[in-house]
Image (tube, rainbow, N blue to C red):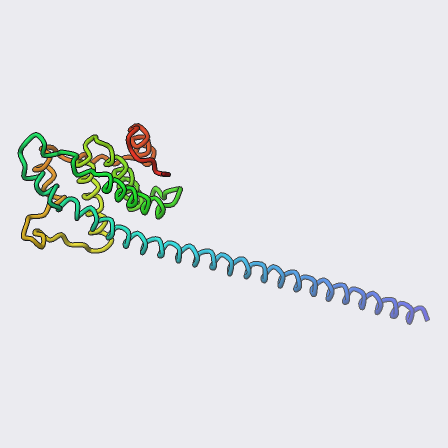
Length: 223
């Protein structure tokens, strides 16, 4: 009798232990599945974020290419237009006259500055030299609207845009324009025009903005 009771108790214990183990393993499986689902969800979300970032980056690069091409065409029309062409070939003391800077041109320059300002992010990537160059163009445009060395600023803008256009759009400069006149070559003609080498120093974003704020006559970025 006692043996039977012991067997019954043992059986109950075994069943209880078995159920506990099964329940534990079941809970473990549920927990692991939950963890796997969570990890899978995080992986999907991470992939979606990466894909979105890549898409936005590609869109930004395409927008920059188009903007650079458009901006270069505009400043090319100024640099190789009648006024600047005559200025380069005029040896008088007025060969760098600011007479070209009419109110209409100032408005055009302001519009081009706004286009760049709208494209550039508020926080520039220090590892993105193209954005840094566009910032230099933006500040150069603003400086060009002042009476101080306005032509020189335009030439500097043109040279930077030329470099970007070559890099981003495989642009090739034609030696002569449609009228057969020799065009300004930003790589070779700077010394000829200004009698000195261009300042090649690379300025930080803070230095460029400080230069802009130091000139009370320039157009503000947020106007």
